[in-house]
Image 1 (cartoon, one colour):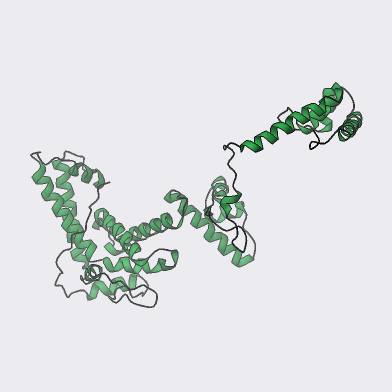
Image 2 (cartoon, helix red, strand yellow; image 1 turned 135 degrees about the horizontal axis):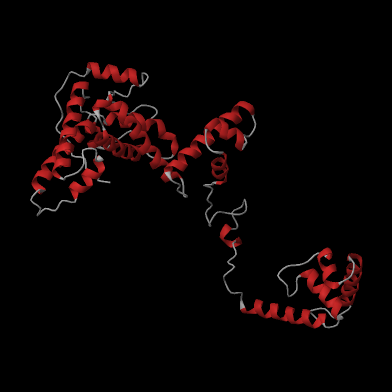
Length: 355
């Protein structure tokens, strides 16, 4: 996807005719005072960067100005498609990527660069006049674990994306269209930051929808919602609900204390199965193995086989008496009697410490 690295700030517009636009947007967003330029209220963090605060001084665009800018964008993209020999319905991202790939030495470079500059100016007009909308959206996510400045930056990226995709023929104001893009950019940034295990954006949205219902259901009934109930109320397939319930972002640090007095760490309790045992431990294991083999020689062949099957000595697993009986050719009770006799004989042998 084509991206601009910087946002070129345009000169402040001297347009005082914003009353109608302010009133319409104020009504659209349910009376929230997002049009005010004072962002140091009790619910938000103060923004100290001078460049950001100056961007909020740009006046809002009227509907006619938005339509004019959107028309300029349509004309610029139409000219780019014609210059790059692309179809009329080619996606704008594809057009921008191909335009950026045109070499400086190419004879069409000057015309392409002129059209890109025109698109940049139109985009900047839409962005700089709606920066305050980003602050309004970011304030709703202050308790989600992300700094205000970081959310504003992510919201501006969403706003820039909306400016390129905006089509005035749809019949809605740019702020209405851009608000969804701003929210999406902020939500995705929060999801990536607060989780060590990063899932795709669609999976994150499904998890949020599922847990929102589960929390609401628990508050209403005091019970935990089952997978079938979640599927019925969220519209998610039942197998998807089962998979989402198994996802977990619970991550513990290896240095986390194990005891309340913080005397031990979790790392001390972890075992590496691939590591080699210490030399002295290997010697002890070998001695025990030799002693067991020597002890089993004191039993007859049938008793020795029963003991080895029962305790998994020389086999991949230990067998039950019911499983051993068919292999020996006797009843389960007879296997139990032979096992008891064998254990009694082994107990009478010298211990390992005396060996």
